Image 1 (cartoon, helix red, strand yellow):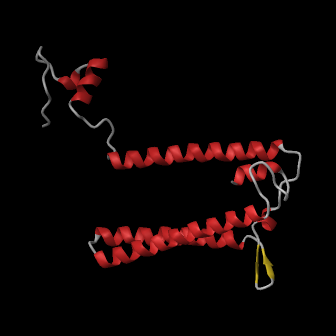
Image 2 (cartoon, one colour):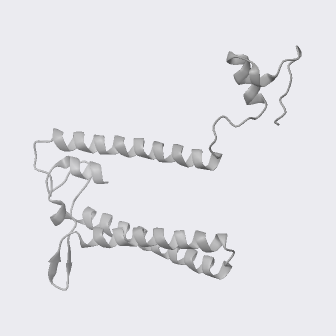
Image 3 (spheres, helix red, strand yellow):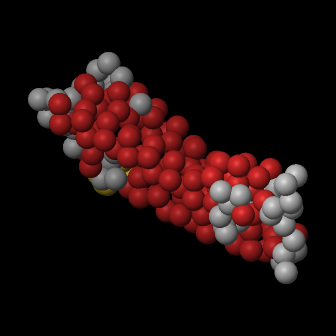
Amino acid sequence: MAEHALTPSGESTSALPGLPGVVSDWSADKQAFPVPWGKAMMWIFLLSDTFIFTCFLTSYMNVRISTTVPWPNPSEVFSLDIGGAHIPLILIAIMTMVLITSSGTMAMAVNFGYRRHRANTTALMLITAAFGATFVGMQAFEWTKLIREGVRPWGNPLGATQFGSCFL
């Protein structure tokens, strides 16, 4: 049977109604919800991330709808010429695969870390870091390519001016 603290008048603190009961519970360091803090914080993070990306996407939609100038074709803007062939969206496809693969290597590193396999954990963390560096390098390449093509936050030779301010 669980023990409960008593108030100066001799009644159980778990039986206090209203605000005094809440204060008593919080000061007794009772868990308010039957969820571990790590799990609750992860859900709060995911919820805040959802709100932030919703704001970004809503802002992008507003900017995209508000312009009367044609928006640049993403297949043309993000295409690369490889071996004389014009390949649309190849860089974005490669960056997506790098990110997904780095998530997999990180998950495997965590798994090996829980099992105390230091060598495997270290190797997978280094592979994940290499994928991260590859992704950042590809981002730098993509931005450099767009800047060379004249895309700026205040202007864009490929179409609507707002495109440069949304991407950069």
